[in-house]
Image (cartoon, rainbow, N blue to C red; front, side, top):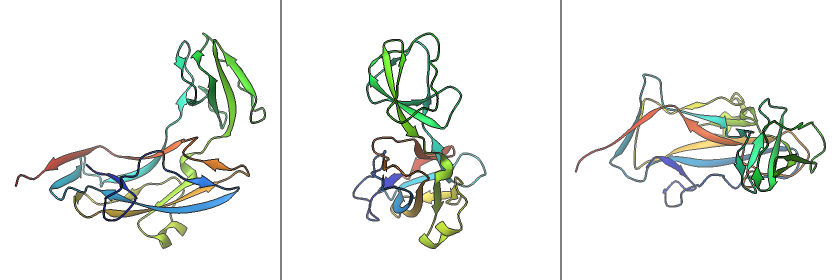
Length: 193
């Protein structure tokens, strides 16, 4: 299966959310390896476009009358740049609450659910992707990286990522995952032995 790996030997799969910690403002560079450890597997783009990896927002919008589990992170239906974590599980109300841009830690009630202002959300433009470390300096924020028309398993592609925290608070992507790396539509096949 084509996925991200922690090592070029493809022995340790990188599971999302990736353990990326931001200690204050600034950037952190990481490298993951995209590929399949099955040398007989091939992936191609469904269209004529190349295979492209792109940073994508994964925050869900608040919904009325939905049961929220503790720990779920959402944003308002009209984004205000902040995210909110469900701290008391329950069913949201019929009408969307007033989220406001209050202080981190402020609580907002919606039906029987309670959300806590969790801070500014990460956005795709906080991520730069490149095929080598030097390319990160030139990569456009939030843009994808092209991997060609097809990839053969057995040999991964190193994907360099620069994640920037625009804020002064410590951020940890394993507790507030907002961004994932998506692909365009792909078709997978396996060669017969």
